[in-house]
Amino acid sequence: MTPFFMTYVFEPAPPVSLPVAGTALRFPVRRIYCVGRNYAAHAVEMGHDPDREPPFFFQKNPQDIVLDGRFRYPRGSRNVHHEIELVAALRGGGADIATDDALDLVFGYALGLDMTRRDLQGEAKTQGRPWEIGKAFDDSAPCGPLVPATQCGHPDHGAIWLDVNGGRRQSGDLNQLIWKLPQVIAKLSALFTVAPGDLIFTGSPAGVAAVERGDHLHGHIDGIGDLVVDVV
Ligand code: MN
Image 1 (tube, rainbow, N blue to C red):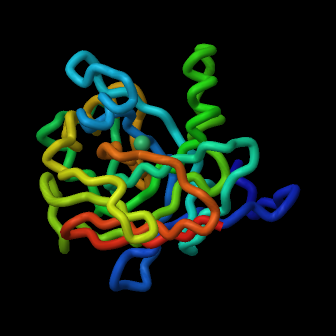
Image 2: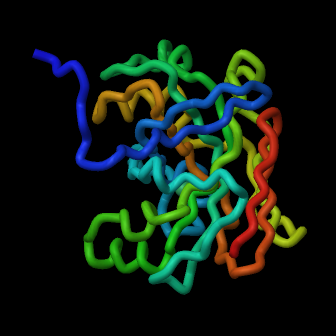
């Protein structure tokens, strides 16, 4: 029998949510999936052959999201990289989703930064250990507001760039994605049941590099908007 009320040991944290641009609505976040090495030029700069790899995934935690425009430089690392990315937000879910049906599940899009403790990720790679230490740390997912697909459509081309202190660091075009979003959703949902609230960081163009305290990051994606983050 379902209890009439439930008493928790302590008050559960409210769900992490993203603002929906131009509205008072919030998008509650369930899981964060990220695609690795999804732009050829970035795969090459990381020392990999972009032609040989199926997409692969790692996760961050909803609690890693930063919405206040401040990235608190993490402990435990001396080499933290920026990765500007298009983020897709799912309003529907399922398993084994067909590519033709995939975009119907997308509520909207945002800019995100897949902040990475590159030194710790590198050690994990060398030692065959999981990537969480390099990818899923506090503040590792600065995000902007979600733009509903009813407004922006499903962008498959357009400039994506990141300036640091006014100089261009990362630059690419969404049409350079190796695995397009419908394929990403199909592949992801073959491995995990995806659900409303899931975010997908779709990968970063070339030019990833280290940040320092005091840096001013300004990301942009045509048709989605801008994301401004200070490293503190
Ligand atoms: Mn990334």
